[in-house]
Length: 251
Ligand SMILES: C[S@@+](CC[C@H](N)C(=O)[O-])C[C@H]1O[C@@H](n2cnc3c(N)ncnc32)[C@H](O)[C@@H]1O
Image 1 (cartoon, protein in one colour):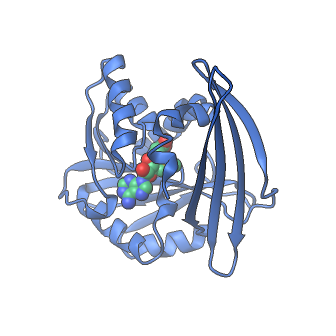
Image 2 (spheres, helix red, strand yellow; image 1 turned 90 degrees about the horizontal axis):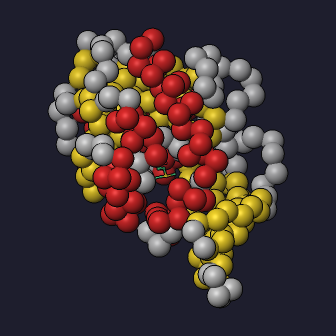
């Protein structure tokens, strides 16, 4: 469980190389949400489940005061090293997003790249409650999550990446349990060393599938205003591959 964030943490940015390239566009969109949806100026941001800091550091580069929190120390080690190399001052905290205990400290809380789907519908309420406490009045919670029922193939999808003199062969597939709205995200990462020896790591994570309506209804119990946007635009079309939850804590 969670091998992607422990033994594979140092390979995370390589595995998601394409997404790393896309993150500037994601943060452009999030800044639009900060400007148009939040009801206060956004200066201080808590990035929950920050991982290796891909979005966290982009926010910091743009001048936000950012705190990143993640369950896995291995991910934070990578994030801290990148912050050091880039000369960015970001506070990283190891912890469970469910146990956060902040009161009125942040203008925005973010949770990127499907991290919110690690939380099932009973614990997600605890998460919403803690996020609401962490936010200042007028602040906004932003989290993106995938459409679990999209019509594409369940895989396998295979691609390769390079990290230094190592080559990675990544094979992904997924199994959906529609009755339980669970997505089993499976991945085999084969790391080919320069001497052609191979190290293989298997990832098998269980994620929760939320429809936009379910996410909105759950969040509405905690936030005065909840909007679900499609991918990278402040609207919703019938066939979106990804959704963005935008929940506002009214002053
Ligand atoms: C798909 S990664 C996303 C990382 C980062 N947000 C990004 O956009 O690249 C999911 C992250 O959620 C973290 N995570 C999973 N469960 C968590 C929890 N209960 N509390 C905090 N972080 C958690 C994992 O350690 C991992 O770094």
